[in-house]
Length: 240
Image 1 (tube, one colour):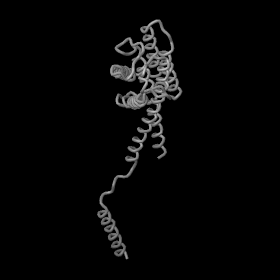
Image 2 (cartoon, rainbow, N blue to C red; image 1 turned 45 degrees about the vertical axis):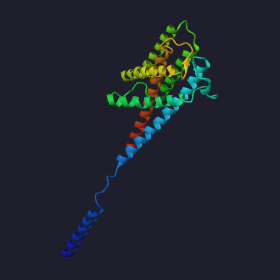
Image 3 (cartoon, rainbow, N blue to C red; image 1 turned 90 degrees about the vertical axis):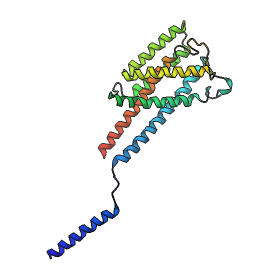
Image 4 (cartoon, rainbow, N blue to C red; image 1 turned 180 degrees about the vertical axis):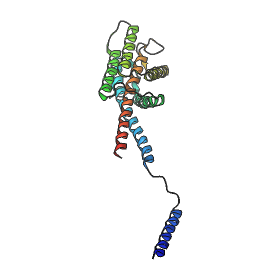
């Protein structure tokens, strides 16, 4: 009887080994592929949200500039609804998405996670201050452009100090503001639009301050979205 059972077990083991050889190596199964897919999906979602925010702010703030005759577009390119050229909102939306995705990426590369005022209420206050700075550049009358530029520079640095305070945020803000100013000068030089009272190489001298404040604002939104994504992934891992 024992010999019979031994023979049956040996034959079963041999059958399983033969079946395993016939099926070939198994594909690795696990959370790896799902994590990659989730990261790509979350990246697309964050980029889409940042693009939408950038388009909305561009329409609102550019409408304010056009109504106050700070910027002038050729009549044939203006939209009757938004008083803006068609290419302005997509360009601003794309730049906003890139900036919002770049900030948390730089934080991870430098190993310096941003932890200062990481809540949505702070982000909304930052957006409100940014809109206020743009409103001041269009509607508040100053004695001269130098006084206006210095005031906006102080407000922009104050926005960074109040809602960011990171060296990487300040460095990226200055760098992107200078590049955006150069791009705007090229657009004005090629006649795509113009400023009513240019005082610095075809543009207004306070424009880099506006760009700097906008970069800090979109960077804060991007960091907050990335923080929400990390919390969601951690909760999912704990549940699994």
